[in-house]
Amino acid sequence: MTLAQASIELRLPIDGRHRQMFIDGAWVGARSGLTIETRNPATGAVIATVPRGDRRDIDLAVAAARRAFDGPWSRFKPYERQVLLLRIADLFEKHWEEISRSDTTDMGMPVVRTRANRNRVIGMLRYYAGMATALHGETIENSLPGEVVSFTRKEPVGVVGAIIPWNAPTAASTWKIGPALATGCTIVLKPSEEAPLTPLLIADIMNEAGVPPGVVNIVTGTGAEAGAALAEHMGVDKIVFTGSTATGQSIVRASAGNLKRVSLELGGKSPVIVCADADLDRAVPVAAMSVFANSGQICIAGSRLFVERSIHDEFVERLAAYAKGLRIGDGIDPATEIGPLVSLRQLERVTGYLEAGTAEGATLVTGGARLTEGALAAGNFVAPTVFAGVSDEMRIAREEIFGPVISALPFDTLDEAVERANNTPYGLAAGIFTRNITTAHQLSRKIRAGSVWVNTYHAIDPAVSFGGYKMSGYGREGGAEHLDEYLNTKGVFIKID
Ligand code: NAD
Image (cartoon, rainbow, N blue to C red; front, side):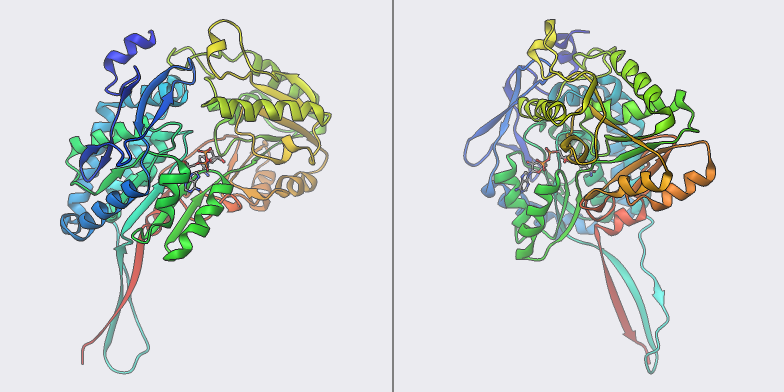
């Protein structure tokens, strides 16, 4: 199918038209009248303009979210919020093809991947629908004199500001909107300026589902303007942020004005440890795609590949063969496995690391350059890359690249592998490949990261917590802990004698 044919089914503009943002249940432009262009990274074509919202638009959205929180939305019972979330999930199901194509045209994620994410995203919405009626406090025995009943109540934290990156717009939006609606919060979501279109499509779905005005607001704009204004806004009770560690730090500083609550899902430099006893037929493709999926633009990319020395050379050879076999192209083609990088800026960043790897003495096994043959020349394509002979000190082994680049590092003992794997400021995720159950348990305990996968990777479930250790952030998404991020706990004492 060509892009032009696909556009007939898309409700989003892909022909350079303007798309408004969503505040208080209405489609509006920025007060400034300014706009931002968004491009298809596979072709370089401008597919839409969106409002360049700033502080004034954030003020309007936060005020609308507050009115809804104090007004009609506060009267929604848990069951009514549940029904609404289930309706939203049904609409995601109905519109999934458009949603999935929107991520493809706006940020390059191949449709094979966006289609595969369907059950995860819709399942997540239904999970939060279930949780809406499962929120509860506790009755607690106290030691006070006389007859005093004490209990806790869980109350929505209030107006939530959500700031998301561009690498997975659908999943990131639903992972913020789902728990906000389940707990009775209202939300102002600021998408990335690199990929604002799917969140706006999701606003269409909110309208169609009958979400009351002001409960979900989507303000497009840059990080420095709309993002910073949201992070420091005195009317926002909590910020949930997914993005880079550097921006996370500035958000923590911006939150100090009203000491709003903050949860952060940040960057990573995740280790994958392949033991000599691993099932290599499984480990090779999974380790490869732990990085190459989404062209390496995944926070949990297993970009430091520690391989036991006795199998290192064979493993690297098989990994390189796998990388060479991947089909690269415009993600709208269902045969494409690897799409483009999101922007020219990201392309420059990744190719800079490719040059740094070679300059610092790593051995380039495969890839290593921008792809410019034929139609690929118009987009931001980089070949899946494997470096060997990497030392722990090299920049490609220490810094988050956010591109399709694996650094292979041999190890001799498990203790050494764990020590080197943990020797990073990040702690988002890790992978272990072994057939030995004792090794699996020991390593998964010793690795300091929020998610550890054994003989698999990328497994994420709405009921299981996800989040970072160390500079990969704090707070959790997934599971009951996730809902707690959107709730305040109030202690109530009632004297009854
Ligand atoms: P980024 O930090 O540059 O931007 C993320 C969002 O923050 C965007 O919406 C941006 O406009 C906004 N922003 C930028 N500066 C801001 C500021 N000063 N104040 C408020 N908002 C601001 O990140 P990115 O380049 O969009 O995404 C890539 C990063 O996101 C990587 O580091 C990746 O690891 C991380 N990420 C983490 C997770 C996770 O779950 N841990 C998931 C996806 C991506």
